[in-house]
Image 1: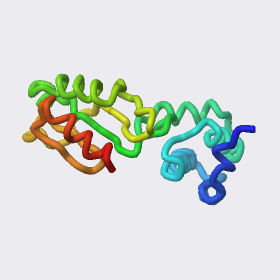
Image 2: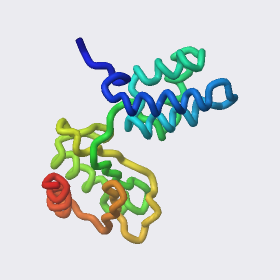
Image 3: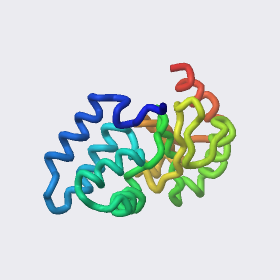
Image 4: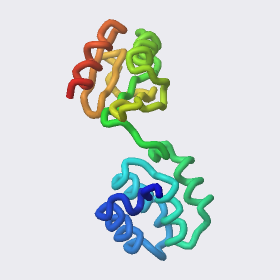
Amino acid sequence: MATSVLTQDKQKFAELQKVVEEYKGQEGSLMPILHTAQEIYGYLPLEVQNYIAEELGIPLTDVYGVATFYSQFTLKPKGQYKIGLCMGTACYVKGAQKVLDKLQEVLNIEVGDTTDDGKFTLEATRCLGACGLAPVMMINDQVYGRLTPDDIADIIAKYKDE
């Protein structure tokens, strides 16, 4: 029998139950519950969405609709290292597409995907607010600027070895 996300980690499920109970019956409770659920699990698995819907007495389609409408929510697990490459105007003009192509080649994934080992998730983002360093990428909270495709393999290698 497959292990349920809800029963796999009893501490996480207890945290989820606590937050659902805290907000249950309050107007506008879905958003904060989804935010907390994603903090707990790292994403919003269907089982978690279903549990929230049942506990709040709302259709699963309402929960799923909110979870897919807002870009801060994700339905897929993210990697240990979240790579965000800026594709804003300044970065794009300075070669971000070539850097992105190299990232996809080195990681062997497309934008929006996670590597099979669960280490890296690749995202194309809008402006990161560091236009003077264009093209710019962030790996978790670390900023890398003035990138060229030749920089990518060495940067990724540092994280692969961790």
